Amino acid sequence: MSKPTNRFAVVLITALFFLWGFALNMNPILIPHLKKACQLSDVQSAFIDSASYIAYFLMAIPAGLFMKRYGYKAGITLGLLLFAGGAFLFYPAADSLQFSLFLIALFVIASGLTLLETAANPYITVLGDPETGTQRLNFAQSFNGLAAFLAPLAGGQFILSGKNLSVADKQAMSADQLQAYLKEEASSVQVPFLLIGGFVLLVALLISRTPLPIISDEDDSPSASQESILTEKNLITGVIAQFFYVGAQVCVSSFFIRFVSQAANITEKPAAKLLSIALLAFMVGRFFGTFLMRFIAPPRLLALYSLLNIGLLAIAVTGHGQVPVYALIGVEFFMSIMFPTIFALSIRGLGSKTKLGSSLVIMAIAGGAFFPVIMGRVSDLTTMQTAYLVPACCFLPILYFAVKNFTVKNVTLTASH
Image (tube, rainbow, N blue to C red):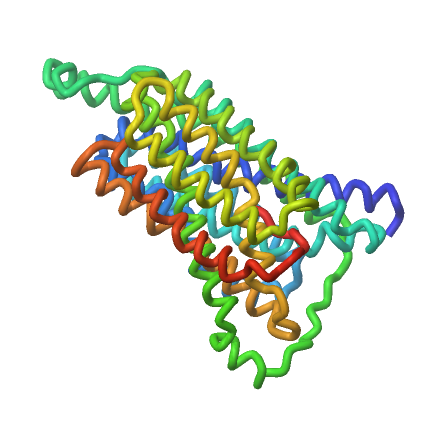
């Protein structure tokens, strides 16, 4: 492959990191928006996250099998087609005001993202000099962070209307007026998701026409040793920690706008901008945390950050005015290093079982489908502010995992979410 083609391939694969980061970070916008447009409870709105993150659990193995048979390039192309198809489904979902259709659309999108995430990491490392593979991976992951920052800004600007009718306002409307209001709210997702779907299709076309290297997956792990993967206690503890971490991360981000509206009486558009700032803090925190690991062993930093997040969430639950908002922004900052650190510590020392172990840790992303529903239920029974006790509890298993790994001095961070 020639150097210019190689550079173009790097640009395309890096775009995938941006695309899935943008898609996943639209959920915190969709949760308050569809709650309003489809007249949902908090627990019902939490199924927006469930539809997305359960796809990672259900599709991880099928995605791997598909790529094993047809190759990574075919997997990327299929992933992009599913992504685009799910985005286009938002149009009829908004027309019909059927929440179930929105959930199907989100599941289809996330199924495509599963294929993209499975393929993008190995691809970016082989597109060029092997010695700079990790550098390219980290560079590509920075675009994932950029997308996390931009998604709430774009969603807040083009999807959220800023109109929040009280129960009394709705009761004062006629049935036709209420239906017109709900249709107007729902329709605001149509053009943005049509544009997203069109752009993703363009990337799929470019990928299909771009020469990419063939990555061979060598079966370097004897089946006998694979059967004993569940005996790896550190791995299993790490999978559990990752399950709770992703649950905490999704809970904190997805209900951020609802929390800010209740706790600080800030309307949804300014709240979306605050969420963008919080996700920017997450991105900055990852760079700062990586720097700190030169001086503090990763497990000890993970334990410290877990304790800080428990304390900050306690402030978020009990505080008043702007203080809880600042506390949540702090939580985003201190969550930043957790996914890659837990990932690296979990698969440390697995040898020939590393690939299977990595798959189990990735499947733990299903925590993002489970805990938001619990949090939504707690919110319906109490308040959204009280419901932030759920992610606070999630940091306890992470703290335990970190303490169990205190003897580890250093790890290589290569995964992010």
